[in-house]
Image (cartoon, rainbow, N blue to C red):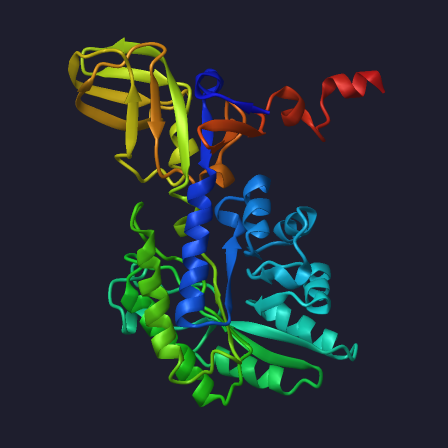
Length: 404
């Protein structure tokens, strides 16, 4: 059932998804791959925002799903994704799901020693399968100061410098029924610059030449960044990747996989929250709202947001500290300077809140909030706010034992 904006405002806190913007974001990725490479696909990163409605929507628009756990694999299948439209990554796969993915034609990228052992077991079953290998190399050496670990290195994949990658390649090549069919290059970086992706592309080419690899797919991972309203610039990433890869690979023979997460889902999602109270102390004015900081800043890093105020007040206030609903002093979302005075019942709408927010929302004091999808000025509720029934599901507590 579709409802108007005035009704949505009664259901704060809530996330609002712009259906049309999400579609356009995905299409820009798809158009870029088609224009600059040809044979390729977008595998949406489920972990970034695993709301079932989102997964189903991008799936229906032609996206594959990238998962990093057995649970996410099961979720992808539950919402109707075919196994051969799933990219299975991550270092903590379970053996049963790992075998299922190999058998069912999923794109599997191995990332741990035990997966290599499992490949040897699977090889003895006599069933043909292909796998990709996640590459770990010293990105800092070619892109100084890009490491998120301040030079501490990337913990994912098989390292090139210490010869782990070489050993994995040799062991897979020694198997009878398993083929090394792809390389997975996903690497996070501080700036997510074009240069990072150029260096990743160069590394694919050099490794393929060094180890005589014929690749069915190249998975460049995610960690792209474009500003809202400038999403066409995603084409620049794809062009630079493609220009380098074309020096060593044929687009007609090698599939290009991109795994956008935040780049795809951050801009289409907003978060609406209501002012519950205003309190003055001898130091500050605190504006208490019904949506906490961890709803839209789960990593607790942001000091400002893109926002819109809904208030009838025209009076300006020198400083207002916007706080959340929890009983934690750190639950402070932002500080408004010289903005209109906020009062009880006023609304704050935060933009760019789709990446890692819903997936990392806590069950702390309050439970998961409502989610609405905006389409043509009207809204459809795609998740109801969690209440006691949802929170208590599968729990055992005193009342249950007394009834027994």
